[in-house]
Image 1 (tube, rainbow, N blue to C red):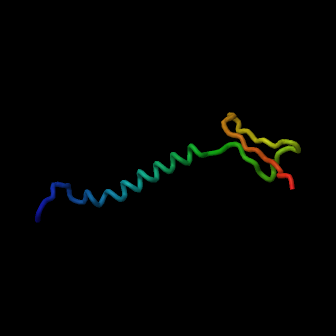
Image 2: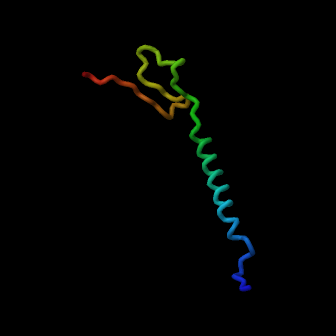
Length: 68
């Protein structure tokens, strides 16, 4: 049997390793995308409030009604 210099079964470990790396990367992305400021049916904006600003002031969401 000819030897290629690679340890036996090393190429069989590549797909599982890539899967683990991909899952770890996706998990860290989910942590960074976690939102704490939300608009929900049970927590509506007050009457004239047209701007929703995140608690740290980094994001703002504006609401408007176009003139028809």
